[in-house]
Image (cartoon, rainbow, N blue to C red; front, side, top):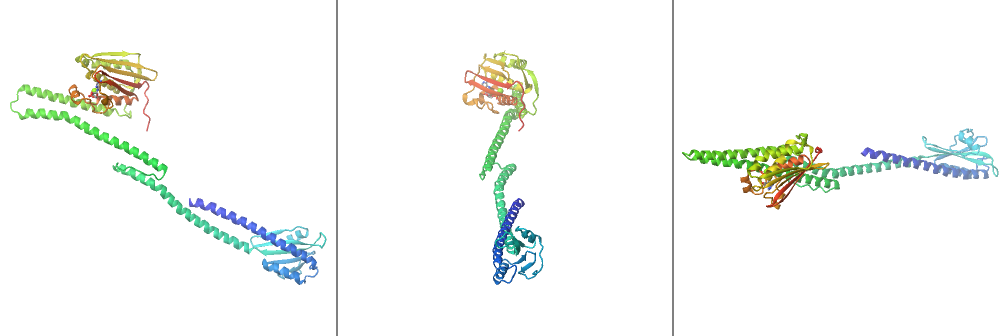
Length: 459
Ligand SMILES: Nc1ncnc2c1ncn2[C@@H]1O[C@H](COP(=O)(O)OP(=O)(O)O)[C@@H](O)[C@H]1O
Ligand SMILES: [Mg+2]
């Protein structure tokens, strides 16, 4: 990241320095050029080309040389060096390109970056005419510019260095600020993995982390509810399984504690023990059905089933129980229905509803089962003329082990798991189940299930 910061900084510095350099050279060139032009005009006044001994001019020439730490040469028409402030080339002939171009009327100048000097030429014009009669050649050092450039580079590098340092420090702080709340969230998740689920997370540093911690808290809440309901389920199961055990233990003990118990009493008590065993068995069977009804639909076995036939079979199987109470069972089909269902699970749901309608009915009552369908769903209605369910209990009857009237229900028999099983079986089919009831008048359960099975979505 720092490297990405360095490159543009250095590039910017380079561009700035280059721009400065060309501007400084241009300014300096123009300045010298000016000085030379002024001097050239003065040369004519003193006939300098013919006699280079004029003090006035020579002082000016040496001044120029000193101020700009350079060298000035005056060359006449024949390219002969008339004056050289270094006194090296006087009397010699100068045929350098710039001098010749200047003779032709141009004013070439040139910057030698390597050796740090600028060369400027200026034509000496014939007084009152247009003819070039000589050339003034000035080369001045650009050391001052070089020094400035060096200073620029040094200062620029220092500034860039400081900026990068600040940038580095800032990014470390910023990264820390971003990472710290994430660390807290990770820590909280790890705590949950270790089994501590009591700490609520508040990481409000950023909107994102606040949303994350809210989502986390929701998840945690859900986890807690699951955990609690699992604990409650286990304790309910244990309790339900223990009740028949306790009865059996009491019955067995009372037989064992007495001597010479009459045979009839043995028979009676053993009969009671057998009943308790049946009950224990029923609870275990129901529990296993419930556990198999897992909502993921992984072990679901879907086939195309004729629902009309299936309902007839279920009613036929339950007929003996209905006859015991002289309950009349009527089945009504509005149309033939074939649907994709898990036959075992679906039968269990309907059996439980019809069995309840018979069990919680009055003697000589009736149970009415109807089947209908539209293009998407089929509907089953189980109506009875029974005792009904009080309004306050209606929301709970689908809970595991929930029974409206414990004492009354106990003598009717049942585990409190039937409706939980029925509801799970319906949910596995992505259907819905509802109850309508009025105490003392009767109860109606309605079930709606899609004709075509839709698998549960992953995740
Ligand atoms: N058709 C019904 N009429 C009246 N009460 C019902 C009916 N169906 C269910 N209930 C009430 O709902 C409770 C739960 O039903 P269920 O889960 O099948 O358990 P169980 O039948 O084993 O008691 C029953 O104990 C009963 O009080
Ligand atoms: Mg039941």
